[in-house]
Each structure stands twice: as structure tokens, then as C-alpha cells.
Length: 452
Figure 1 (tube, rainbow, N blue to C red):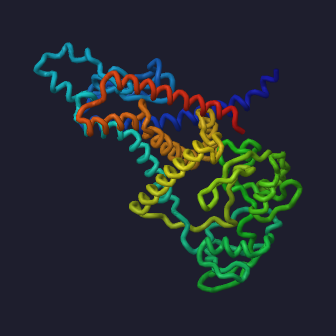
Figure 2: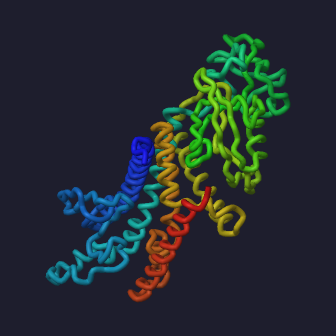
Figure 3: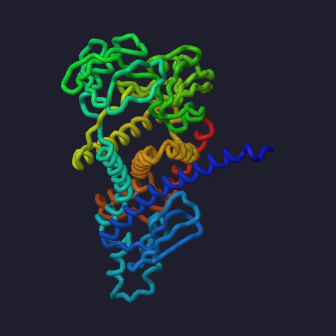
């Protein structure tokens, strides 16, 4: 066995594990902190705040009597409130009040999850998913504040690096694009429609406003086959493509427009596809095998396509405007809500068989995705954490016993029936919920190894 050959693989595996643990730990901490802080504000005492399960590696008890600990298995966490028989707050520890004198029992009972008012219990349970959504909103808002959003009129901030075949070019930073190939342009949608009416060519004519003057200048095709982004666990990522690579040919056919590349990949039938690409002045040869993916069409339907898992970019980096805090928060809410609605839609189509069950990922795929996104840079990794945080918040709201959503259903029943479910019913439903969760985890884990 070539032990030296295993070193890069071990390094990649270690990086993936570290990225996964970091992402999961942040999301779990935020989720559990939501339970903890709202519980505290509601008068419910937390005995233990644990990040991870199993043997305790580090612990500290604060002045309120809460034990904060880090455990050896970083695959989750929990908050155990006063009087809980378990970390899920499913049942009460009937023996915890035995040592307390009768006069103090009511006061102490109010500090427990099971003895607190219904509103306090419901708020504490709902706070976990709510804080996951809040994390996503704040991260997306921060991106809008610090990176901004493209201005409405196409404006050049920086022309991307391209091989000589796309020259000569006279596009410059600050140019405002008002026309392409003789067609008027006011928005980025107009730019795309104008390009669609032209035959792709390495050099086209732009009409720009420069220093108050309207002039015609040559510039590269607006949508060249450049790798603008790489999806995690994708054919492109596994083949070694990088953001910024310019694809010169695919399957032996030269490409000028990103749409041409899409057509070649879609028609590949999943066969290995040789690529010639340009990377920082050097031409490279790679082979990539497209993978089947469910592609969402503009009408919301899905279509099975062979894909590399890359996104394109404009020939220039658009000038952006930073949003104010309120506008950025609004944008963060919209992005988070978009993830929630698209996730629910996709899950519904998995259940009905409209799209492949391979769209349900397990821990191995999520770990790989964490490593892939971390390798693309801190900004991509932070963005991925925000997306994953939304997914975790949504999952926990499913009305399944054991999850927060199941507890909220119990609380809703109590609000209507004026009494909580019986202890026997609770135990039975929690067992059913645990079985469902284990089955879903097994299904997702099988997908990790079964799906391409």
C-alpha cells in the first residue's frame, strides 16, 4: 500500500470533518441557545447546556447554576431544564422535588419546564427553530450590507480575466452598459434578452456611458463559459474545476457562450466529457462525468438533467450598492423564506415521486458539502451555514414527536383540551416519533452512499 498517496486524501477528509463539525456546532449552539435564553426569560431554569453528547470534555457552572459543557460527540446538543427526566423535556423527573419543603414546592415547580405556564413552555420550544431562522436572516442581511446588491443599470465594477481569444476589449470599470449589439439595455434582464438575440461571438459591441459620453466599445461576450460558482458534491468539484476557470471546449467542441456548454453537458448522456480550460494563463485538460440532477424550471416544475454543478457569471463584476440595515433585513427575510418554501416544495415532490429521493441528503453528504463550501472561501462557508441553519430550523418544526414541532403540537392540544396529553400517550407518541426520525436518518444515510 502507498501510504504517501493516502496523505492528501487524509488531509481532505480531516478538512471535511473539521468544516462539518464547525458548521454543525455553530448551528446547534444557536438553536439550543434559543431554547435556553427564552426559557430563562420565561422563568424556566436550565440545569445543563450541552454542545455535543457523550463524555464531557469541558464544563463550567455559571452563577445562575447552569452547567455549560462541551461533550465528545459533536453531533448535536441539548438543554436540560430543571425537573426534566431526559434531555428532550418529554417527561418530568418526579423525584426532583422530594428534598424540597412543601412551602417552596410551588415556587420551585414554576422554574421547571413542566410546571411553567403553557405560554412559557411553547415560547421556549419555538425559540430553537426561531433562532436558526434569525441566524440565517442576519447572515444574509450582513452580506447585503457589506457586499451589496447589483445596481439596476448594468455597471462595470471589474472586468474578469479571460483568455486572449476574447479580446480586444475596451470595457472599463465605471462603464454603464446601455446597449449590446445595437440593442438598448436598461437592466440585467435586458442584457440577457439582447444576448439571446445575438449569435455568440468572442467579441461584441457594447454601448456604454463613460464620463458622460455615449460611446461604442468592443468587449467580450457577456456570458462566457466561466465557472462562477461550484455546487457542493458536484461533478465539477470532484473533477477539480475552480471558480474563475474559463472553459474553451467541451467534448471536443469549442464554446463561447455558457448556454452552449449547458447544451453539450445536457446531451452528454452522462458519459465522461473532456474539457479544455484556461486557468490564470495556462491551458489544462480535464475529464468530468456529468451527474443527473433535478433542475427547477421557471414554472416551478422539475426536469431531470445531466449537469456539472456549476454556475455562470457575467463578463464583468457588477457594481453594487450597499443596503441600509432595514432594507438588508428585509432582504434577509426574503432569502430565508425562499429557502423554506423551496425546501417544502422539493420535499413534497420527493414524497409524490415527482423528483428523485436522492434530493434528501444525509450526514455524509452534508459533511462533504461543508468541506466543499469551506474550500471555496470563508464567505461561501458562512453562506452555507446560513442555508443549513434554515434547513435545521425547518426540520425541527415538523410535527413529529421528539422534534420541537411535535412538542408544539402537544402544547396546542393542551391549549384546546385544557389539559396536557396523558403520560402514557406521551411516551407512546415519543416512541413513534423516535422511530420515524431513525427511519428518516437511515433513509438519508442510504442516499449518501446510493446516489451519485
